[in-house]
Length: 140
Image (cartoon, rainbow, N blue to C red):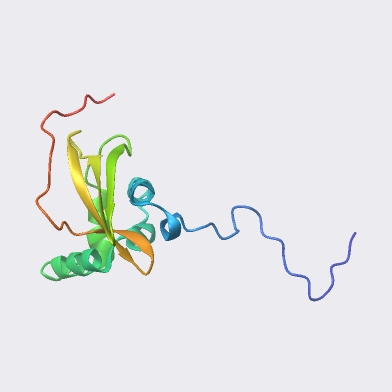
């Protein structure tokens, strides 16, 4: 039996080790895929980490009318349908703003806006007219 020195730090298993924050250095597309994953997992804290301040403020204000917390609002959103994959296309970056197209719950291509906050891409409120391609994809 080995004796550990008194000042030895416990060894963390891979699951316990801090995971890199993909949103910290990820592109808008990578952040969207992370948000899709968090939504599928109903990971409220994860979603809050990829939403911009304006989205968080908007959701919190919307919940006030119904006495719902921000977490309640996000939890409710995770129960709404989304497309079966995190498919996206046409990432466009212009300074601290970006857009991608993703498939909405009906399979139509829809624009999602992003803003850079503290050096990280975050999902933001739409800055222009949402675009939607009329031909939905076939569900697999």
